[in-house]
Length: 112
Image 1: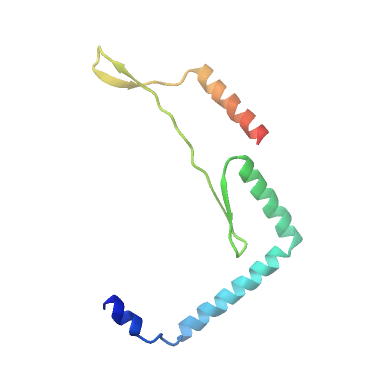
Image 2: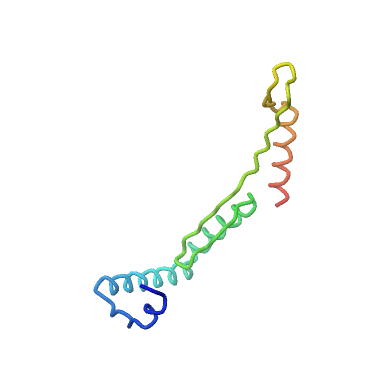
C-alpha cells in the first residue's frame, strides 16, 4: 500500500478491543490523578526522586505515577605496553587511586 492510498482510506471504527484499551487508559488516568493528590505518594515519590538525583540518576516521572531512574557509569581502564612481551597489559588501580576515587565519590554525593 502506498503512502497516498493510505491517506484516502477511511478510518476504521473502534472494535471491542479498542474500547477495552480506552477503558484501560481512563482507569490509568484516574489512578494517576488520585496518586498525584495522595500525600503519601507525594512524600514517598519526592524522597525517592531527590535521593536519585543526588546520586546522579536521571529521573522520569510518568503521567500514571510510575518513576523511572537511569544512570550511566564511566569506567576507565588503563593499559600499558610491555615491550618484552610485545603486548598490552591491563593495569590494576593502586590502593591509593581506589581510595582517592572513593573519597571523591563520597565528597560529590555529599555536595549534591
